[in-house]
Amino acid sequence: MKVLVTGVGGQLGHDVMNELASRGYEGIGSDIKETYSGIQDGTAVTTMPYVPMDITDASSVEKVLTDAKPDVVVHCAAWTAVDLAEDEDKKDIVKAVNATGTKNIADVCKKLDCKMVYISTDYVFDGQGEKAWEPDCKDYKPLNVYGETKLAGELAVSETLDKYFIVRIAWVFGKNGKNFIKTMLNVAKTHDTLKVVNDQIGTPTYTFDLARLLVDMIETDKYGYYHATNEGGYISWYDFTKEIFRQAAAMGHPEYLPENMTVNSVTTAEYGASKAARPFNSRLDKSKLTANGFTPLPTWQDALGRYLKELNIGEL
Image (tube, rainbow, N blue to C red; front, side, top):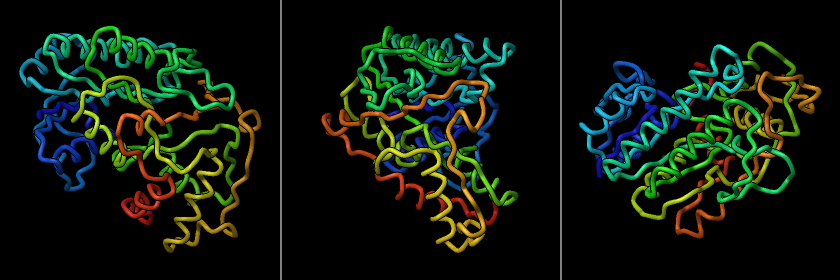
């Protein structure tokens, strides 16, 4: 099986390439840069085939995909800077990447009759209530530009193709890029008190674990919409922060102990407005995974522990 992966300069694309390599599949990485621009961590992705592609340019997409002739495209590339997406001078490029770029890929996948995986987000919903969002729910109501453009990407895929997996994730972290865990660990080095919100609820997603599931999926024809985050129960960002620091301290970093670092629980309103509205309810119902024979992700607590070991906290 030959698989082209977009966005290999980011967290998920990096891990999908390595998972493909570990199973003996042919992976081709792609991103906007001329050469692979992710971390040089000695893993397979750093030496696997790579081709630059501007997904916003239909002719670029057509040439790259037609030349590669993949069996599957795993589309991880996206504009993910949620607040920046609200800036007037950024809205066109965000739409070009998340909506038009995705449509360009879907159009060529249709011509080539190949499978497509599109990574999406709970931000396609309005984040109200306390009930977990189901993957086949169509009550779309994005709160911000990022959510609007990711929804447009979803619709481009589902209206163009039959052989697709749309996989919504939340609270993403991985080795190859910025994320909440790295931010908290770094901020704690210069502050002894932090405010973290307690009324946005969801579950984290470790890209290393998600990559395994995505490759499991493309080995099947069980197409459709899915939700995939780590197991372990729903939490707030405050809960997540407390566990990050607890595990980091247990690994020999006393600066994260409660006596050295105070974490205050606040509401979103108390924290102060961000440019983009955030969903309060990011709970995702993942029962469709097991119903279709897929193995769920490990708990987020377990994922966090493995990730912190990979990170080398002292060198952040």
